[in-house]
Image (cartoon, rainbow, N blue to C red; front, side, top):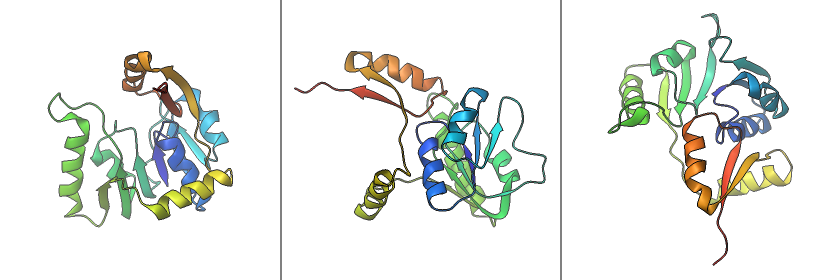
Length: 178
């Protein structure tokens, strides 16, 4: 499995869940986050500031893209012939569509004509999944990393930091009791 954005808020959790399920994970992150994703159990790390996704020979059965900076075509090039690409979010785009909508439409259309499954993460809350997450957390196999907390009046600052796209773990806004 390849996880792009493996050090971010969603990626660092996806990495730990995949490892808890016995997956072999290649994490993609920047230089400053390499040790962080290794500490979470990544089997291999690609520093995107120093190299691309490979030499054109390596293919992954599953790609989870939480970063949204690579085109669907580029990701398909490193996806196994019958692999699964899961798009979690998107960057860029324009004010009306954003990157996610463009990537969503591209993935849905291409998936109809390909042996590769190109899909979007559609999160639903259900008891079995929450119980599984609870068990992983209680077993210390899932450890959310909260890098920074903000007071409620700093929420705009928190969002501006998030927009920069360089998250390491989660950021939290603390809402005082009423």
